[in-house]
Image (cartoon, rainbow, N blue to C red; front, side, top):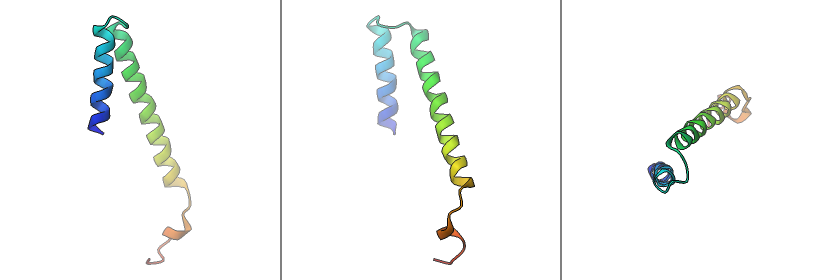
Length: 61
């Protein structure tokens, strides 16, 4: 997980240093990506919390 974060930051910084993007473009991309990840994680957790799982229904196993 740390390696992925380092890669994301390194790629973003390199895009700015090489002049391919403005800093605001990169920061907006990071913010959009974090927002999307938060939305997907939240939706998945809500789905798991509201879905009936018969094998978890207190059978003791």
